Structure formats: C-alpha cells, structure tokens
Image 1: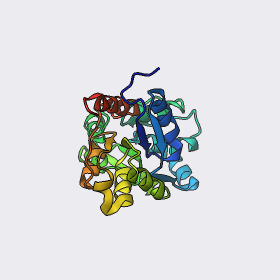
Image 2: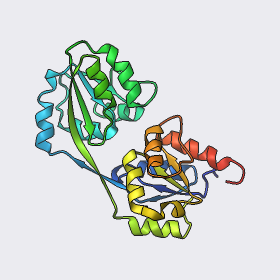
Image 3: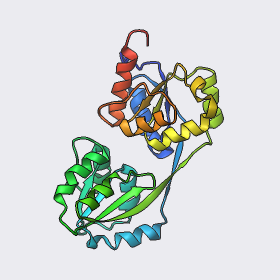
Image 4: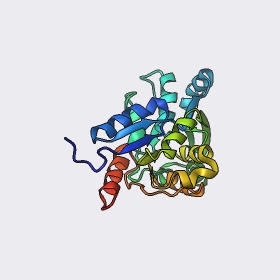
Length: 255
C-alpha cells in the first residue's frame, strides 16, 4: 500500500505516445492515476538525410545532443562500432538514451540545461574546431551561439520536428470541465504552447484548481508566457524529479 501524496490523484501525461508509457508506469507505482493525452507529436527527418549527415561525422571534433529524442532518431543510422567525435549531452536522460547504443558521453553537465552545457563545453573547444549539434526544430539557440563565440565552427542538424497534437482536444476539455484532473504535467515548451492553443480563451477558467507541473525552468517560462500559472517545477529536471515535486506539493496541508 502506497503512502505517496499522489495516491489517488489523476495526473495528465502529455508526452508523445512513444514516451508516455514509462512515465505513466512511474506514476502508477506511487498510486497516481495517469491519463495519457499527447499534446505534441514528433516527426523525424527523412532517413536519407540522417544517413547523409552520419557519413560526415569524421569531420567533427564534438557531437552534441540536448534531447533524448535527438539521440534516438540519429543513432539508429550510425553503424557501430566506428570512430565518433567526442559526445556531449545536456543531462542524464539524454546520456541514458546514448548508453542504449553503447556510447558513453564525454561531457554531461551537473545542471541539466543548454546554458550549463554551453558553459562547460566552450572552454574545451579549440579555435576552429567543428561541432555538430543534432537537435529538434525547437531547440534553443543558446548553445550554438555560445560555442561560436568561443571560436567553434558549429553545424546544426535538425533530426526531428515537434508539432502540436490536437487530436485529444475533446477528451481533455471534458476532463477539465468535469474537474476530473488534479495535475497536468508539461515536459517541454512545445507542450506548453500546444496546451495554450488547445484551451484558448478558456485556459484560465479550465485550469482553475488544477496543479500545473513543468519539467524544468525553460518549460515553466514557456508556460508562463502563455498565461498558464505553474505550481510545480522540480530542481531535478527528470520524470523522477517531477514526481517527487508533485508529491511534495500535494503533501501540503489542504492539497
């Protein structure tokens, strides 16, 4: 029997279908009731475009990833073992995705943000060294800009696009209108934008009484720019971190 403050709480999981299952399983493990309604969909680049970029890896000193999705869409096209550039990733989740392919990152920052990765990587990049940044279409420009200022020659390759998924609009509106959700989790800025687009002018009223949890400060900022009040933002930007932060929130008196 679980004693988690999330026990019995209905939590909306807004991740894409391919990532929702593992997060939902963790929520069930602490007694929560996950409801999966994806707010975004991921579309990979054409296989021939990825394969063509893979063939050029020997031109680069560093290979950089700031999302697990970038790793998962890129590395199936890499025939291993083969010589690789030094690999830098933004955090544990991205590093874990890399390890699935038998590759250990040379650099993982202690704070899981592109800003911190840029600060750690810039001093390691020599003038004129080539860096390949494999990213989604919504990736922040912070990292490539910082590396270019440090003297690196940075190429950016968009390996996937993130698009709104509005297919669950009616079920989500019904859940909110009937006050059946205790919390909504937003795991990326694009999910925050999609939620705002989906709810429209009704957003404030529909979200009243619902705890909004964001995976980290970048997503929180995106949600707040959309006029969404954020109640929960963990210091550890992982699924485990957001679950712990929700438990702390709901353990407060009156929650």
